[in-house]
Image 1: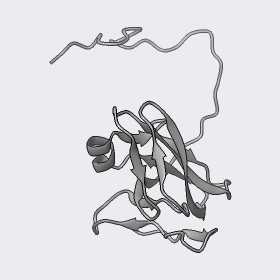
Image 2 (image 1 turned 30 degrees about the vertical axis):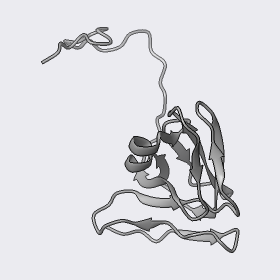
Image 3 (image 1 turned 180 degrees about the vertical axis):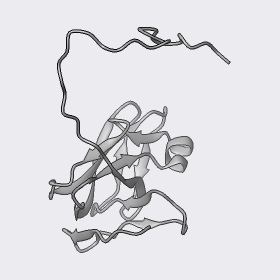
Length: 147
């Protein structure tokens, strides 16, 4: 299923997101920076994409790491998953954190993250005195076993 999403280039060197294959869920986001950026070990750099999006109402843009960049270079979004709301019209910026022990250079035009558009549900939170019972109950971390 395809959905039209309006994109605005904010800089001349901005690259419209692309899908790597016909069945890719995430579209690659590219560095729209004018020059290379060095991300030092244990630090975070804000990488501008040079684009803004008009995400349709009822969808959210979720920014995830690119597996190759995370596994091979140690770079991943600092906030783990970025959330782009449908009413946001500013530049999409990816906060990349360097989990490696070496400097990593991000070149202009390099793929830096991926965006997945997904539907979401908002809740009408209802405060109550008691919640319904379940078999699990209040069992937390690791309470369902290891099998």
